[in-house]
Image 1 (tube, rainbow, N blue to C red):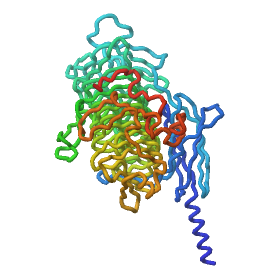
Image 2: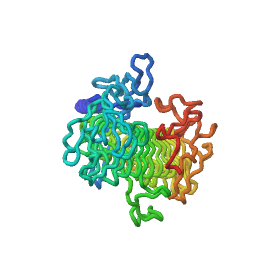
Image 3: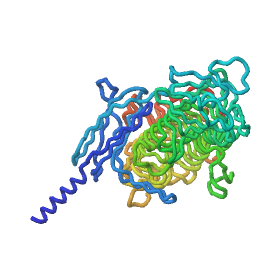
Amino acid sequence: MRVAILFLLGACFAQAQNDVRPGRFHVEHPTLLNLGFEWLIEGDANRNATVEVRFRKAGTQAWRPGLPMLRMGGEYVHRDREAMQYTVPHGFAGSVLNLEPGTAYECEFTMKDPDGVTGQAVQKATVTTRTEPMPYSGGRVLHVYPNDHEGPKQEPSFIGLKAAYYGEGRGDWTAVRMKKAQPGDTIVMHAGLYRPDRLNYVDPLSAPFTGSWSLSLKGTKEKPITIKAAGDGEVIFDGAGNHKLFDVMGTAHHIFDGLTFRNTEVVFFAGDKEVMGAVGLTVKNCRFEDIGVGVWTEYAGSSDFYIADNLFLGREDQMRLIGWNQAGMRTAGIYPSHQLRSFFAVKVYGPGHVIAHNAVAYFNDAIYISTYGPPEADPDRRASSIDIYNNDIHLSNDDFIETDGSTHNVRVFQNRGVNAAHNGYSSQPVFGGPIYFFRNILYHVPAGGAFKFSAAPAGMVVYHNTLIGEQTAREGYSNVHWRNNLFVGRDVAGRGIMTWANATANYSTDYNGFRPNRAAKEQYGWLVPGAPLRSFGTLAEFRQATGQEAHGIEVDFDIFENLAPPDPARRHHVYHSMDLNFRLKAGSKAVDAGVALPTINDGFTGKAPDLGALEVGGKEPHYGPRWLTWKPFYR
């Protein structure tokens, strides 16, 4: 009898641990195209709970399925050198993808568990996607001219930005600020060179000693403060070699549109960690050249930036690909060291940012999320619900895009990266995820791999990417799921095509295409907890031993219309995207070889989705600024 009672008590205890108990449900900041959600839980020790997602436009009848939310929790994210440690809380997170801007959507989330759901099993939310920030049509229009302007002026007129933004005042009087711009004002910058003479005590542009403009006014979402080009010629803000051109970390809802920035280390400094940051910063249709950094915030409270349709040109070598290696390192090649001349084009932290349709060239890295460290407790002070898409990246001395420091629902999609010395797309680390990498293109990454998953990141979803390169790093990562990708090897001597380095038992991989390196005997590596690394020469051997990639295939370069691999012997060579064709050949092995994924490949042609970033017969994405019809940094 006693044994029976203990058995029943043990069974009840196990049931209490395995059933799922829903907790806080959080709606993240909406972007223009996507919505993000997080749902914390307790229980579900056997991790068999799921959350189904469906959505529809508000007021319509038909529901559409979304991707299920990603189960997360218990993953240990760490980096010993910085003494960084973090255990991912238990819950679910996920995005509703590929929506329309400015549209209300009804979203429904249903939690299920064979062991039972104790509490509210269904959550509903109606959320409206954002629209592109635009100037307020009913505000004042203030006209700004350079100090050497000759000819008629439109009124009210001002010499230099400071006079229109804060009011007149030079020297000691710059801080008086008696005629501040108001929410809804549009400051129209007329053609000319705005280059402060920082050592001139009474410089007409009013940027004494530092040569910087510190902006701190507050617009609103409905009535932003806009600083835009008049359209009568190029408007050039020249830093004259200063450290910082604009300090905007005290601003709210500012728009910078159609301007040129050059000759400075940092163009927009928009937030300092644990100090202050901007809200609703928009920078669009601008040109950045001869700079060290474009847009930069480290502040967790910075939110809802819109950085789009800009051209960023750094100072790094344009004729050869050189990494950041220190002198004497084995991977440095014939160039023994690299000095950092341009750090990155865009770096952000905080929720709700959109970084889209930019062209970036000649930086160490192109687009960053701040590594930051473990996320704060407040879900609105995390790197979450961020979109990075349709960017065209050329020649990075480190990586193309880094999601390092992200928490939940970062979407990296439809980007094209050509020439990165070290790695392509990075998660070093991620604190739970999901981080969505889908429909990205990568070409010529000689030293590293397609994805840099290091510092024990957790929660990456990798779908439909075309990657001309290998994935061979053996650092452990958790909760990664691979579908419909193409990993196309370059015949690098002694290097396989793919290694899965799973740090936990939560993973999946299937429906991917691989082109093995002909110079390597061991092509596929498999690492799981409690077992040594195993290597396999063929995909068939790998499938039989692991049960993974039941629908995976091996391919070759003949799947493409016309694409040759980069030459492994020319690691410093620079390739140009205008010479590369990543489209699949109709009828090739990669066509119709994928699996349907709701909101990712809806509307595919043929019997099934194609592998890789581009669907046969589909419209090719526009990479880079939508106003840019020529490629000035490609030649």
